[in-house]
Every structure is written in structure tokens, then in C-alpha cells.
Length: 48
Image (cartoon, rainbow, N blue to C red):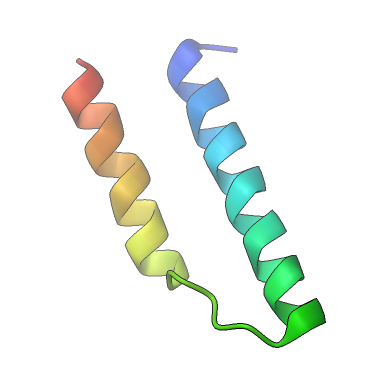
């Protein structure tokens, strides 16, 4: 896989970890999926 694909994969996995943890301890998820995707997208653009 390409480097960017790996970055996206890592970021998504981290986000899902956060979501799972928030379900367990009833904390607030820091980001909505749309915001998260936007962050990934922006970070990919900056890398070019």
C-alpha cells in the first residue's frame, strides 16, 4: 500500500479506538466522522 493509504488506515483505526473507549466510559467522542475525514484529507494535502 502507498504511504498515504497507511496514514489513513492508522488514523481511522485510532479514531475507532477513541469511539470504542468513549462507549465504554460514556465520554464524549472528540470528533464527528466528517470532521475526522476532513482532518485526514487536510493532512494528506499538506504532505504533498
